[in-house]
Length: 113
Image 1: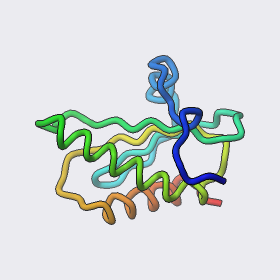
Image 2: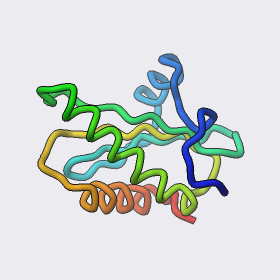
Image 3: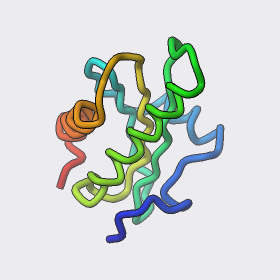
């Protein structure tokens, strides 16, 4: 499996993202929330969004980049066939902390192979 994040692996349509917010299962820890639902496709699709509370766009975009990178490194360990939304909450977290948060959420959700 390739390690990069292709366009087929991203959730972009508002309708699909809203559906996840309405009916998806949720797992939460301090700093992140994971919403997931089965999609019956051979790949996982992901969307990363931020909660209210980020003051500047620079901080908001940096946190989204960090979270996408953490997912990219973990995606080979995740079971295929899920739509995922990661909601990021503000805080003074470094990359390794975000990586560990995402990894623990995926394990708690039972999405790790």
